[in-house]
Image (cartoon, rainbow, N blue to C red):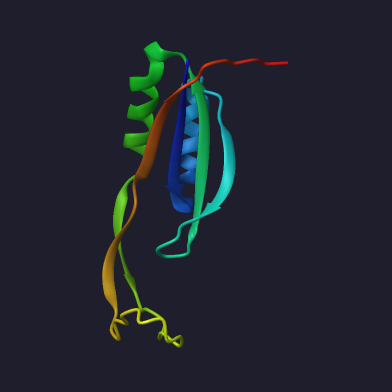
Length: 109
């Protein structure tokens, strides 16, 4: 058994959830926040048999697409020495960050 942990942008969350259900995968959704953009994410915990890992990864890949977003950074009010970019910049958001972990023991009560 494997545990697939997928961190996806909130925009992709409902679509991914629906696709996982259609394909017969159970998942737990957790609200999370990204550190870089401080924007909402959803973290999916998906327990899956080893022979279905590639299938669940394909569902995630097909559902969660990267996109460009223009952000305007806030001014750095602190004196921590961090650099500040005073103009809007384009960054890539979306897609998915996925971890596949071996599960030593699984129980369902």
